[in-house]
Amino acid sequence: MTGDVRDVVVAGSGVAGLSAAVYAARADLDPLVLEGDEPGGQLTLTTDVENYLGFPEGVGGMDLVQRGREQAERFGAEFRRESVESATLDGQPKELVLSYGETLRTRALVVATGASARWVGAENEDELMGYGVSTCATCDGAFHRGDDVLVVGGGDSAMEEALFLAKFADSVTVVHRRDELRASEIMADRARDHDDVQFRWNTELAAVHGSQADGVTGATLVSHPDGHPREKADAGVDVQTETVDVGGVFYAVGHTPNTAFLDGTGVELDADGHVRTRTDADGRPTARTSVDGVFAAGDVADPRYRQAITSAGTGSMAALDAESYVESLAAADRTPLEA
Image 1 (cartoon, rainbow, N blue to C red):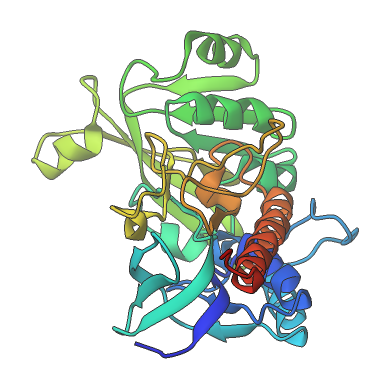
Image 2: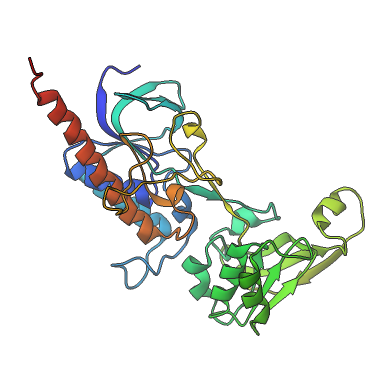
């Protein structure tokens, strides 16, 4: 266990964590940023970011993350390539057990560990993620003007993605492994009623074709009248295989918040594992969680927007709330005890 107690530790190095680090460092809180296993988070999978304020010509996702890190380091933030395995967060100081076995102590913790988009296991998805395969239509839809694209999924998120993509793409085909949607009736009706949105029922994505130089050029689909065709193919059942020409593939099969290390800590999570943040006495949003001294920012606490710009905003909120909290601890230490 380290002897020193940090003022602020930021878990996560995506846009939310970097924004928190910048604000905390400028407040002379000497933040330590634990980068995690994938420094920079999901934004590093995006080749071009065109909707982040201040970059009228766009900016690469990796470039944006690197600029944020350099900015945080300029003000004194420290970075370490570790993640939090478990935590004891009640009382003071908080104790964090890191991936290499060290126990770290801190007065305040900013949880900015993000949420990992679920992939479907299609052939070549690793190579083409960010090069025509995407998990965010809002981020990448405008790059597919005039393309035919696929959306994989059957819930509300898939319907939202399909409807958004229909603004740009020539056609949008929703690929779903069953013959009925999980989406709410209103969202399903909106997608069904759109002239540019089609559905491929009882169908799954088996492979994506293309290259990082050329982007996505096609996809292989498998289908079976009883649904779940990939499962049936693995069991030796005959399925129908078809290759289609498409310029983009969008995954909308959900996100998994990276909150496993918060199990048993008292930090309240929603049914899907996102951190719940709280409002203040006047009902205004904060980055505070159910545990004093623990704050949350970015996709780990945001199942709705999941944008770089909103993550940056909540990162600054978390740092400002953490600064106030650390100051309150210092003020309490300075208060003389009554006789």
